[in-house]
Image 1 (tube, helix red, strand yellow):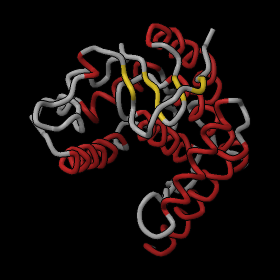
Image 2 (tube, one colour):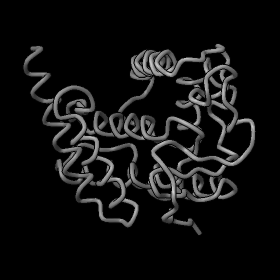
Image 3 (cartoon, helix red, strand yellow):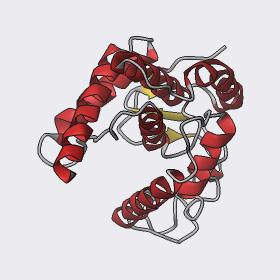
Length: 228
């Protein structure tokens, strides 16, 4: 049975137990995880992760089709394709315990079991994400999103991976690509809204996440109209 996150003292950064995934790059002052490129500055790593994600998202669209059913193996492959050039544990379920901003995620030994349950449960029912009423599509995306984040299967990148999966589900259903307002004016408030919505999703109240995705899809619709 899945264990839900609990309140736990902590700051904004992950607090981890010991292990290779908990190691930091020498010379990074504990700000950059041990990596394959020897990157020591957080700004440089943030850029490297961002550029790798943009690249793999573009390639992913070539082989994720309307009939694609998402599985635990495919999610691991997406993580590996994204971060495999940066971290040796990319695509491998975490072996460290994680806590952040007052939450502890379910213990590492439960990750594989929880991902199997996700695959045979929500992912089997909700993917491929079929066209239909917008509220139903966004509800499906929100449920999968919250569950994947609750499991927190990887050492790093869970939020970005979960949003990427939501994007693919929404595109499968024929809706515009969501646009997340996480940079620029008003982005601090939008991030806070998103995080609050995710926490509500942890207790199976998905309405705030549905509203978040609805706003992001509407931004995508407007952006698409502007481009055309």
